[in-house]
Length: 54
Image (cartoon, rainbow, N blue to C red):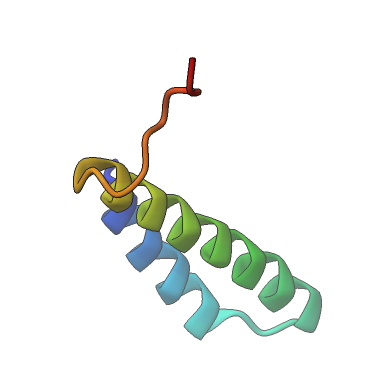
């Protein structure tokens, strides 16, 4: 599953979440997935380097 698919699934789950605790957990996971996607995009564009400097 791609990161974009995962994000869309989390958004759908969040829309359908009834309980406050469930919504908080899904929201936290969604925020993490969005941050991971941003890092992946930045790495792909060469804006950041995943390797530590030597």
